[in-house]
Image 1 (cartoon, rainbow, N blue to C red):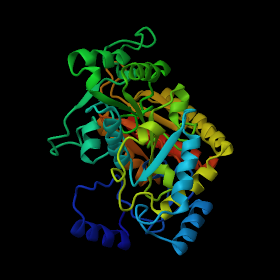
Image 2: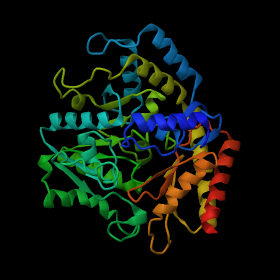
Image 3: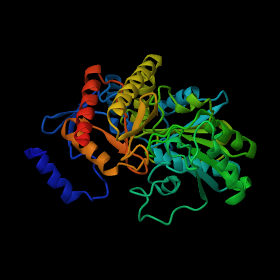
Image 4: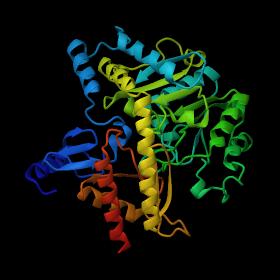
Length: 434
């Protein structure tokens, strides 16, 4: 990364931007199309990161760009609370129709996944008149204070930022590769799901719990996929105790797991469902969709924000949902099959890959120093991300141990680009084997 433009921008960044906003790669993007990013020096990179799950459909989708352009020429902002506009209501109607559940639903919009989590908590507390919120180990729900309190991972998200919001309780997730109880599925009888009932005895009674918030597949926590019974059992407990069941689908939604929403894989109908990331096609947008009687609990004026559901974002969201049809979902499923096969082939070749897991194209591989001890290969994972970037492939790590390589590949990737990406991964892993 020694070009003149790169050096100028690096120096400018160091002078003007604090170190807190970390950069995974040293790159400066100039343009992007499909699954390829072009930097300011004219180099091209295959993108396996998708803007951390924001570009499911691909960079520069023509109809999304056109919707943004047309809306910008008509109306950029009024604030929905001052003067309403059709795109907000139309997008809410679409999400109400598409979200799992045959019950009546209502939707409103915010700017980010963290805001969606914050507002879901507000709604659940208002509806139940309770305060307690249950989240999970390895969970990630955002960086604002309630969202950060719900998040499990300390570094980098929570270190030094306490104290956190009270009345947040945490229980184990179904992380089968590293079972918190030292058991194996299915002989474990999903013991981790019983942790919710144990919490009622050891930490807080059910009459004080407003909501359980869960990612159907944990994202930042390591692309952890629970057994199908896990979410179903949690949902039944919530129903029996009058607790709101919130599914955080900010990363798992919009086709990332091969279905519009990951909840569909588990036959679970959330009381509240959170969307974001790819919903706006690159424009800041997140949605909170839920049962009408729950969503109507807060008083008029209790929800919202100045930029929430911006006209440009809502038009982009409508264009995204137009594209996310059965054909696109089939493309997602096909991509997922190829990614899983590619990772499993690498696992057969390299001992450092301890586990391959995922749903659809939301697939990750966990790197370990030893398959027997499962000691996280933290330094090796960091080196892999860095070396792949140097070779023209952008990949991301995740997991509480920072040792999982995850794929958030745009569905627009070509077969040649995908193969080149896997060739680069294989070549780089070979360096570690040597």
